[in-house]
Length: 332
Image (cartoon, rainbow, N blue to C red; front, side, top):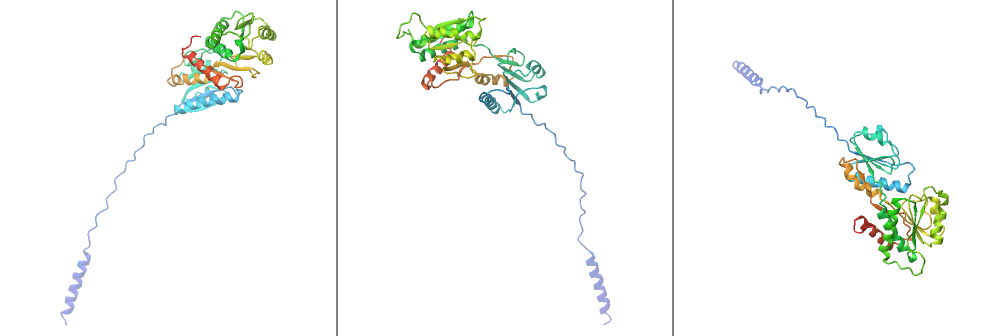
C-alpha cells in the first residue's frame, strides 16, 4: 500500500507534462502597406453643337420646317441642336460648330471673327458676303429657269395661250426672264395656234418705269388684262406689291410670281422661288467639314401652289419640267 502513492504521483506529473505540450501556433502575417492607385481623369468629350437662329416673328409653318430640317441633320451627325432668336458672344461655347441664321442678322460681322472654328451660313440676310468662315445663300434669281417654267405652266392653264408678263422697264434680268417665258410657252404648245384670232401674238409684256407710282400699277395691269386679253400673268418681283396682286385677283386672271405674297390672292397659281431647305441640306456636309466662305446656290422649288388651279397631274408635269431644267436637260 505504501508503493501506490508514489506511483500515482508519478502518473500525475507525466500527465501534466503531456497536457502542457500544445500544437504550435503559426505567427500571423504582418500586413504589407497597400499603395492606392489614383485613377487618371479622362475629360468627357464635348458633343458638337449646331444653332439655328430664326426671327421671333417668323410664320410658324416655315419656322417648324426649318427647325425640323436642321434637327434631322444634327441627329444624323451626332450633334446637339438649339434654336435661338438672337445670338450673343456668350453663346459661342467651345462645342459650337455650326450656326445657320435666317433673314435677321444676329451680328455676324462681329461674331464670325470671334469664333474662327465655327461655320456660319447666312440665308436671306442683306449685306453679308461669303468669306472666311461665313457662307451665304446665293442671291441669283435664276431668271432663265423661273421664266421658262412660268411660261410652260401659264400656257398649260390658259385658253389660247393668252399669257403675259408685267415687268420693270430697262431691266436686264426682266428681259432674260421674258425671253425664257416665251420659250417655255412654245415648249409646251409648239406652234401655239389660238382658236380665236387676235391682232397680236402671245406672250405679251408691259414695262413699268422705275419712277412710276406703285399706286398706278393697276392701270398697267389693265392694259394686259382688258385690252390685250391676257388670261395668266407672270409678275416680276421688282414690281410685285400686295395691292397689285390683290387687284389682279379680282379680275379672274391667274398669276405666277417669284415672291410669296403677304396674303395669297385669288388666282395665284404658284410661287417659283429658291428652295432654302434643299440649300441647307446641300451645304451641311461642307459646313460639317469646316469648309466655309462659299456661296451656296439653292435649287428652285415650288410653293404656294393652289391645287384648284394646278391639279396633281399638271403639278407633276410642272415639277418634272423644273427637274429637267435644273439637270440641264432643257435649255431655257
